[in-house]
Length: 440
Ligand SMILES: Nc1ncnc2c1ncn2[C@@H]1O[C@H](COP(=O)(O)OP(=O)(O)OP(=O)(O)O)[C@@H](O)[C@H]1O
Image (cartoon, rainbow, N blue to C red; front, side, top):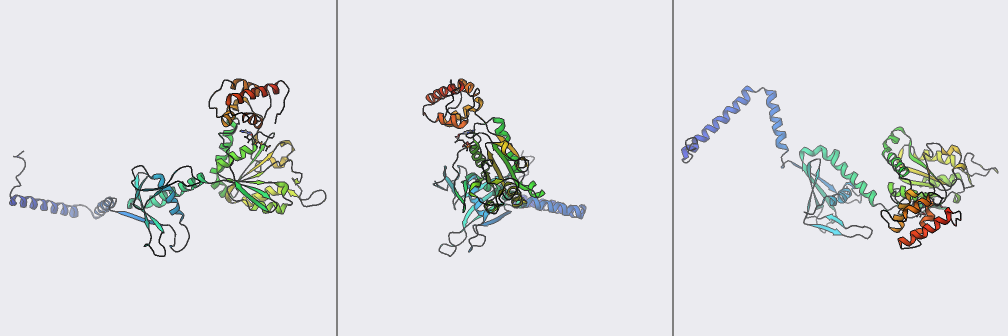
């Protein structure tokens, strides 16, 4: 080794090394300018610049103020979105967080603290967020805040084109998840609302699994096709007809659809409406992304399907014109409506109303079958999995016609699952033997 490496111990040796290094650099420089054509030189220089620009010291910052103009009260939607989104990116490694339990929330709420930096990763790049006050303490705008988003210059385009849209989309999904649904009922003077607290979901519905899947698929298709409906100028709506005997789950299915779509329900009571114009006024107050329910259409004697006047010439409700007017209100997209009609007697409905575009999917809800009984046993008795009495109950159910509502009534009479099932067996035996006490 000694023989190969020169000794750098003396000052003159250092000088020699420096001199030969400078000569080498000069040589490279001359060769770069003399031998490499101008275009190639510019190409190399610009690529080297781009390479060094990606280094961490080339950072860009975006300031996302709470209010677009500080003294106004116009909330910046992006600030709100970041406020909701960032806590989902907080991992256990963070040292300073704000935490609270809100009255209407099941889980603890976390928030980014001003002293904390949140680093998010998106498409393999890092994005750093920090919350800051936008003005001095005691100033007119004190308390107003801004997020500062810092990222590498090389992500300049992806931030605006993809990262921020991704945050806004996540925020929309989180809002929908938390949304408290309402049921609006039509009254003579307008709509009144209350919280829709019906717990039904597709999971808790005792329905044939293929039928459930077909409904969910149809709803998913409806949700996905918003852009398409907008493009072709067709009303973004979907009509369902639910028919079957009372107590077979029509209201439960409506609630399950509302909970699935996160849409409010507008329950239109046709008997409380006196004329077409009143009907149209009510309909025009139904907000976007809602389910309009028109129950028992066959029973409502006031409703005429084709004519606008009754035999005595009085102006009455006309369902056909109602549906045409709904199309008018909905054309060009908007937030989308699901319209659900219910009836116990499908055969009494005018075929003109049954065609696709008005009632796109006809859903038959029927008596309880043995196959779906375990869903009710789980809903009402908390029985998960098989039970020794299931086989007999299922066999009896397949031999008779009992609605899910009647079976549900029997199940809730006794808190003890075994006793409740035994009582149900007794009841079903009597119905099968031809001595039904209550079928629906
Ligand atoms: N298919 C079902 N799955 C689960 N529960 C059901 C089903 N059908 C009925 N039930 C139970 O029976 C009760 C009454 O059912 P629901 O009100 O949904 O029936 P409906 O068909 O709307 O009756 P109606 O025509 O009388 O309004 C519900 O609260 C629910 O507990």
